[in-house]
Image (tube, rainbow, N blue to C red; front, side, top):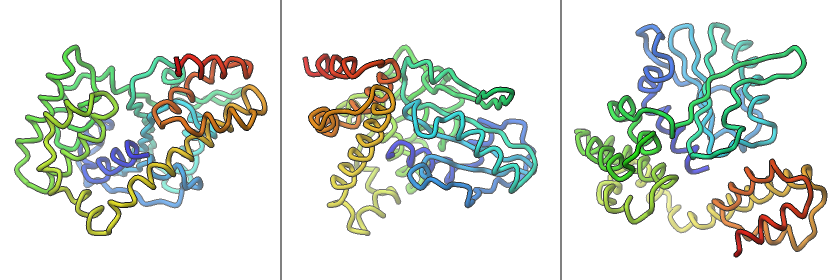
Length: 285
């Protein structure tokens, strides 16, 4: 959830930037971050942001993977109905996929069931021109994941733009977020080289972690996140191929978050438990 939380922080810290990007026809009016009671699933709360500009509401859903329970298209319809009921007005919904992937699920931009059809906008960051993202401090971290034929040059551009931010706290926050999101695409060595850690220590995010004494708990939190991810993948696999043996469940629970996310995408093509076993064997070879 670190990537989702980072994007949520950016959207709520720089709401005007996201409105200009995703809702360019919105009237020139103050943007309000909505703290609503719409979210019923606590595990999903960190990746959803609601912004209000005039009579228009922008619902942003940040995703690193295309699968979930309930499925993403159904969630978008559910949020739309609840937003419409509570606020009225125009509701514009955007799903932003952060990590590049080849799954057909990232091409889905509507919910369909019988005569019900609900469309929403889908943005695959790896297909986005970086120029607009590079022009706004609040969008710079997302620029690290945008379209480029020169990845190192793109990361250098982000670093250069971050360096032009005059307010030190804002600069540190944007740098920290850029480091986090760049981890989806770049090697850690390159990130450390171009996005230096010295400035990150000025970040309010870093300071909050430090002051609250949470640094020692980071690894524990990461492990808990891995366990939740593994539990979700096991549930999806059980529905897809049937009950798993204790040995297979233990093997899945030992996987890293990155491998679990790959498995979560691959399982959409599984038809039997043998497919899972073959996939795991290939990853170990």
